[in-house]
Amino acid sequence: MAAVVIKELCIGCGVCSQMCPMQAISVRVKTAHVDTGRCNDCEECVFACPNGAITL
Image (cartoon, rainbow, N blue to C red; front, side):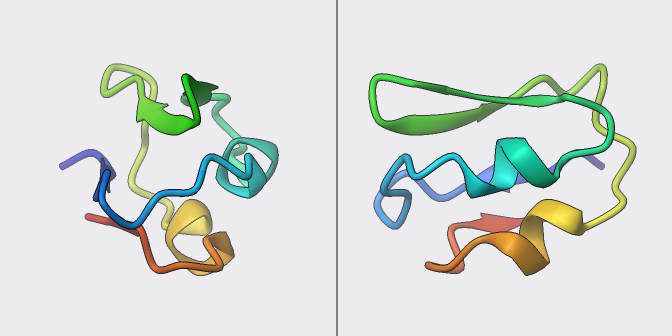
């Protein structure tokens, strides 16, 4: 199961995309978006997000 962004909590800071080893996260229009085909469920983004806006 791929990471899911809780849009109400995401501030678009980009920390998650910087930490993603699979380059599966991009920030567009101040919100993170996950490419579910690239996500490998490593949880790096979950731990990196300062707002708790990403979950699996």
